[in-house]
Length: 173
Image 1 (tube, helix red, strand yellow):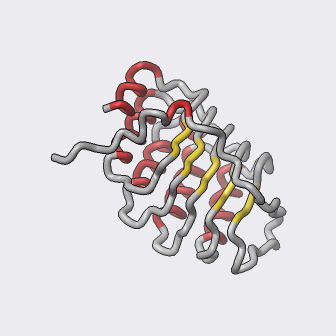
Image 2 (cartoon, rainbow, N blue to C red):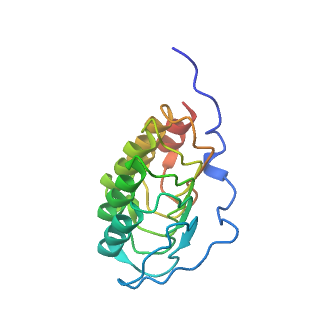
Image 3 (cartoon, one colour):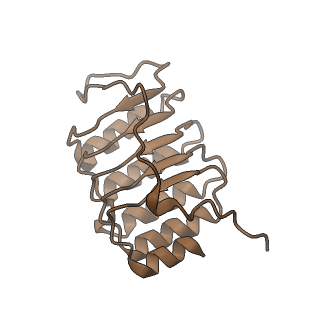
């Protein structure tokens, strides 16, 4: 068994993820992303799970998107599942994803959905911001188990969650 790289040790103290030059995209149902858009921000748009599901359906057809900011969008487990499906989409080139200030960890299904996506062999994601998502020890364990199989993620920010000692130990092992 090969030893996993120790790149996760700094996961709890990773630098802030705010991609430079993110364009603010209106969250109207009629809005369509340009086919050559590389970044989109819906920060603090309060999309909720239904809005995020709708957005992810539209983003699945935008193969050039590399950066997505969904900070403060009131996302819980169903929205996290939609984001996970977007990441699993074979055409996804998403490299930077900010899900800061949501409620993804209020149910273990949220972190589990993201963990499944992180395990995908074709994952391009290099930076994932999950700060302040109420992710508990079991959710962090799901993410840590996914990292064993992920070769692209360089930065995982889990600050201001409820990982506890059990979650921290899962990240270190």
